[in-house]
Image 1 (cartoon, rainbow, N blue to C red):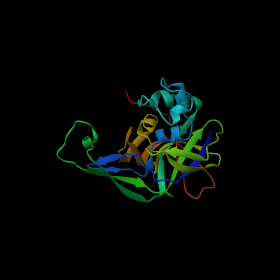
Image 2: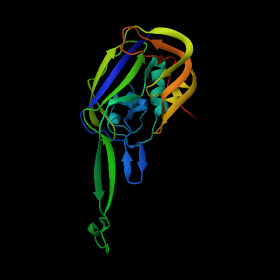
Image 3: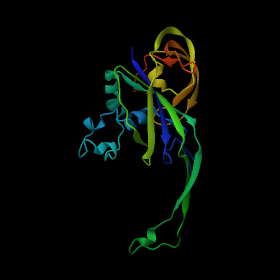
Image 4: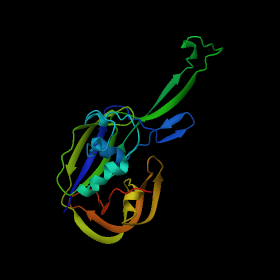
Length: 237
């Protein structure tokens, strides 16, 4: 039987990434993509596939190419039997920050301008002390970092992971999974009947998913958790 963990994250900084752009408003959805979690948790050996890094640790914080390599980075996790689900907010609050900048052409020598045109924007970020929940499925026991960094500002977050009881394998039948899922990872092995869409890059997520497929259940939990089986990282061509 696999080892299944329930993880929680608590933010210690504002978390920002642009889930959607509405005019001058850049909004952060209170959901963490499972691609981002794999990188943040240190599960991806991305330095192995980077061609412009100085050392093995530099890619974690900086990459000169800025080219996503999700398929190359995440496919090895399938071979290791590791899968991380997206994370949903258990509790969260949002903060709205306004930023502005000006046309600074007058600083350039020999270039004249008749006006200084200000501009502005707003970023809706997730506040500190917000908490998120996710699941990890692994064929072998894993250890997890205590602290990780997330988002555009590399915001600090505390990680708390607990192993769930030994799962029970249930045959294919209809069930509902309220947590967010990556549709590419689940639709090939489950018959998805209905869902709500979360529009966010690089792959929009789904939640409140009603599906037919095999799932795990766990004894001794306060809620009736039914976790889909056979989830793997898959990528559209």
